[in-house]
Length: 475
Image 1 (cartoon, rainbow, N blue to C red):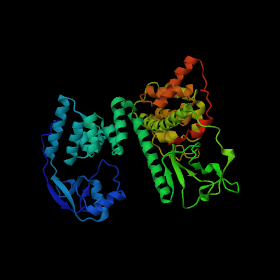
Image 2 (tube, rainbow, N blue to C red):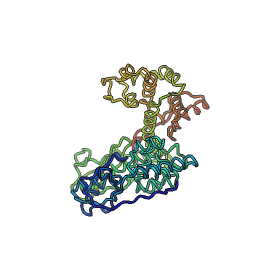
Image 3 (cartoon, one colour):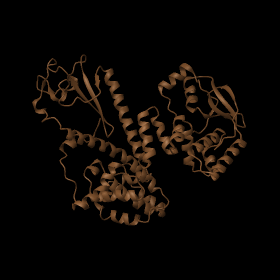
Image 4 (cartoon, rainbow, N blue to C red):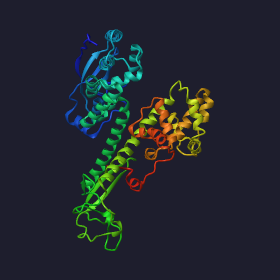
């Protein structure tokens, strides 16, 4: 779309406490310490973008975070590029947008530019959506992308959708992760939500590990960048040591000065574990506890299996988040698939034990999927009956939610490790309804084909004694 309009204005210095921060597509404006310190030291260097309404009020269109930071640190003046709101310009942009859309399909990059210009002219997302016959959620996503040069570039150069580009914003600066996500978006777009959630979870765990590592360094520890393992002669875990009195060594037994080592790892649950090490344990008066000696080093095959186990457990945890978000959206549909009745009937018969167990516990997940607050225990009030009485038309959706949540609440990392025919059928049904299964979920779906070919109907047999020890681990 060719932009034939120009926007003129003036640079003014305004009091940040007197300007109006208009509703912004950014739901939060985090003011971290570093950003506030920069504003306090240097002031606002880049002018905010603002418009003046017919009453003379200056309204911030871009620069919400800078304005709020200026207020926070007590600045009395900030630069602003101020334009007069113009309905004529807005009309012209909308006309161009509609005409070009009718003549040839516009790219999302064209729409980003148009939505941004319309917002700058003072139109709210609701008004833009109405006047351009666009879904409001798409307008909001487009405006979010428009606020970020990084995201806008991703839309233009890689033909990403608004949703994809908006998700990339949280990874700006992490070039490797961004490149991986763009690769998924352009080659396997159906897997983008799963890849993004895995990246989000990995980032959160890495940030928590980094936070704990900083605290430990401040306490005088040397933080190791890898787990030495049981067969490293340089670093000895204190869990394998006892004191002269024969008691297990704990961090409290270590000297406050000298060489103290620690390795920090995160787990799927988000928790962090620290493993302490020493080098010259004899000089500290400790000795090895023979009862903890390992039976032997892992083979290369065992190491590969362990890495795959950890990777799939991580993938499963991320996929659960994506899957349950999809279920929430699915249950919000105005029209349900025609085979829902059959699925519910099977759920109340073939899967009666899992569904009944969830019902006995209060249908917590069913409430969550339907967007209803619930206490999360069997003693919390069940609000589903009240919902049905208030809206009889919701009966089919609520019944479906109860069955889905009953089965879903019994999924875990063991589902992919020990797939069953029932779970294979469940995940297969979700994909038939439009859910894009991740690779680890596909393992469960493929189980039905595998068991039919082999003539078995039970759970896969395997020795998981070692796997159970490390299945939660995320290095």
